Length: 222
Image (cartoon, rainbow, N blue to C red; front, side, top):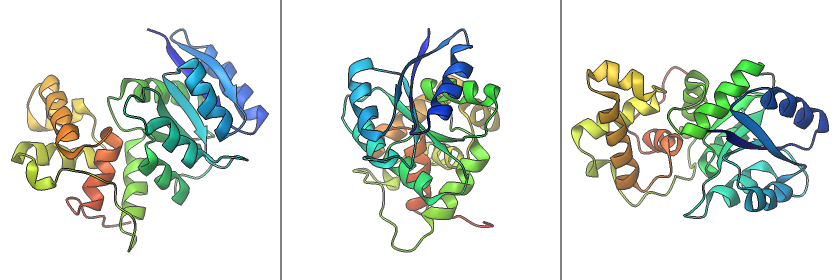
């Protein structure tokens, strides 16, 4: 199945460059280019892309608020992949909290870009686990940081679900978790689904952030 992509960036060279790279992939199609956040929100409603490559700093409406508007509705289907110049950027963390599924450095190779789009489209694993883990840990420990709203509590999870959540927060994929726990990958997927439902979280990325913000995982060594 072809992954439909919308690119939102105020720099024309970035939009065109990524478009050329992604359209060269047999299973990816760039269906539109947005010049800012407002344009991105409107084009998501019109074109129904699977993935939005979202710059953070754009005129009129920035990427964080645009991400919130795109992923906020209960029936939201598009996933957001944030584009950034620096991997330790507080705005990227806020974008993850707003509903983005991961982030990608703008100097990523064509192979990394295509892989990132496929991963986010599949919703199967955190993007760039090591960088994402470091980013989440860095900003989750800031005093007074607002928390991700969750109707459920860590205590509502079973022991195995709590274990799986902690491994998600460490940046492990379903396959890696399955190997470590010596269970089938489908079993891990079932646990992940139940975790999201019990905590009323949107996806794995929010689950990872919540694991840090709830205190289940304590950031150290950063």
